[in-house]
Image (cartoon, rainbow, N blue to C red; front, side):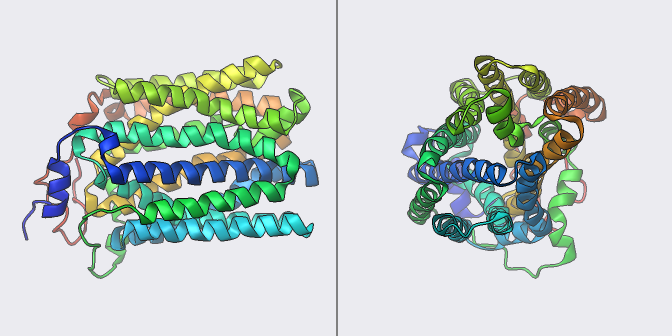
Amino acid sequence: MSDDPPAPLRAVREAGAGSLRAQRSFVLFWCARVATMIAQQMVTVAVGWQVYAMTGRALDLGLVGLVQFLPAFVLVLVSGQVADRFDRRRVMQACIAVEALAVAGLALGSATGRIDEPAIFGLIALVGAARAFQMPAMQALLPALVPEALLSRAIATSASAGQTAIIAGPALGGLIYAAGAAVVYAIGVALLVGAIVLVRCIRLVHAPGDARKVTLHSVFAGIRYIRGQPALLGAISLDLFAVLLGGATALLPIYARDILVTGPLGLGLLRSSTAVGALAMALWLMRHPIGRRAGRTMLASVAVFGAATILFGVSRSFALSLAALAVLGAADMVSVVVRQTLVQLKTPDAMRGRVGAVNALFIGTSNQLGEFESGVTAAWLGVVPSVVVGGVGTLLVVLLWGRLFPELARTDRLDATLVPPTQPVIRRASDAPQSPG
């Protein structure tokens, strides 16, 4: 079998750079991601406020993150195989549909007054399971939507979709929550249904899924591949531990209600401020892609993330807290773009689902498990000390990772990480190089 990629993929890769707006499938993908993430952010605000109003316990806010993380952890190997063996668009559609059903359950339970904490946790766990399959399929689909020359910009633009949603979603969720949690959930369902329609409209010629027999060797191929790429492993794990330690978003309901003394709208603004900074940085990176010293830039951005977390933790001013979260979001966006570009360019298309599933697990660990960690440490140490300790821990991780992963620190231009088209990654029975790199 030839080592060259299939003709349809080769045509996509060799297409002219042009403008991202001319890539119809990418535009539909972007709009679907905006709709999906706005719904997710609105639901997150409503669930957080609803659970804290029911129990008044910081630990329960952490449990919301934990029940979303556990399905991703359990399903990581299965979800990667699904993304590599089936039509990634249909996988996305099915996942969004399941998520819509779960949110509809939240809406119905809240409207009838029969919702309780176990029911919320059960439905949120179902959402987590759907996202476990959706994220690797979505990440693996993106490189096939644009020419290779536009990939770095496409990743920044795709990230801007997420940040646009994080700006609009929490603010809308906090504002609409005045009409009741059921209204927030119902609007979330409508947005998710719209996203399903948008994904269905994507037209893409792509290589067929891998029809070979599933083996233990192929199942663990994504993990082996990441382990064999020191710069990639360093970037993914750095992001994991930084957000795991420094993430304080699970505690925002407590800051909004008890420390900064604002209501649901204030909570929405706090959540949105992180995205404001991230979106501003994403727009900058769309026009000014990271050039030289990408690895050192990532390490520096994570250090800024930790420092901004400490500032937010000790702040008693609503304006200063908003500013600290905005800086935190901008720094995190730099890390996201470097990490995602490394993942996409260093991974063969036939393995993008499995590598994406592992990457998604790391992201979920840092986000959802990070929320659980924040809830636990807040219950043990108090809210403010837990945030400050997390920020200090992030700074220590940056120093340690600079020594453990010198390959990451030496990573220069992101476009130099492209996997050579002659690398025999598709024809091998293992689906991955035995000696990556």
